Length: 328
Image 1 (cartoon, one colour):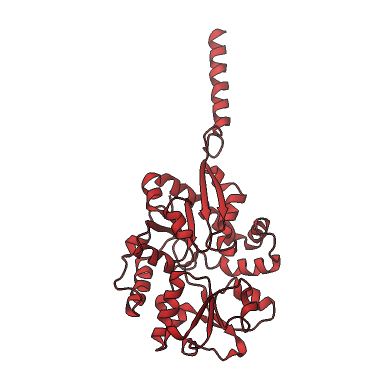
Image 2: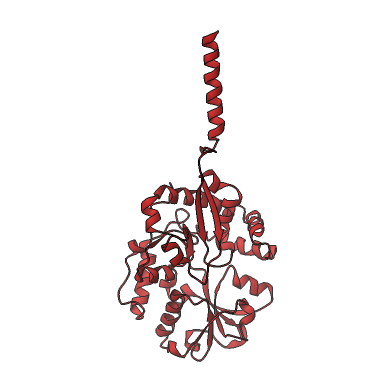
């Protein structure tokens, strides 16, 4: 009988241990790792996969307590570099110049495989190409990478960048066009959708049609080299959960638009679903898997900047990104 009781006790102890450990392999008593993600902009459909991963518990299953916050005046790169954010969302053009400035950050995944942004003006403005930009007012968000691209495309068109009036956007989006500015930089699946739904007709100049080398990664997920060196397992876990979120956004964009609405309730759900439907086919697009990047895309962009006098020398792709934490 004593032997039987011992066996029963062992079985019960094992069963309790399995329950405490959980079906996902995460001990409930284990302290969750605190992770802060700093966005590049207000929450939008570029970010949906992260909100899905948060909402469905994919991060929690990896032992991560994730908080997603909006940026402070475009300072995401700097904040991540100094450890104020574990991960951030930025753009290849800004990250490239951040590396030149000495910030120890790297891209660890791209959210979209191809550049879905471009320059816009009102349909009846007569502004059809960078050749028409001299004497006009451009409203942007003030990023160094943004200025570099604008200057480079004007230089390529044989125009004087100093004759373009650069101002900070007033936040009104397409409503500013024809009023406080003539030109803006829009994301096709977000800003252009909003303008179309409001009946505003635009001239849209995709960046990657102005020059194929502007088909760069935007946006991308970044972290600091300090995080990469000190806790590579954290990076792997975060990206593993994030990839699951984007897989859901691809498979069921309408449902995931509803999830995004929970975290950004001021948006119109019809607009979110249209935008989400557009991006569902662009998160992976022609890549073999979500998040992966190529040297040639980084190298082509820096070559474009060097050719147009923005950079003195190219920045090695290996300094800017890594795929080593994807697919783990």
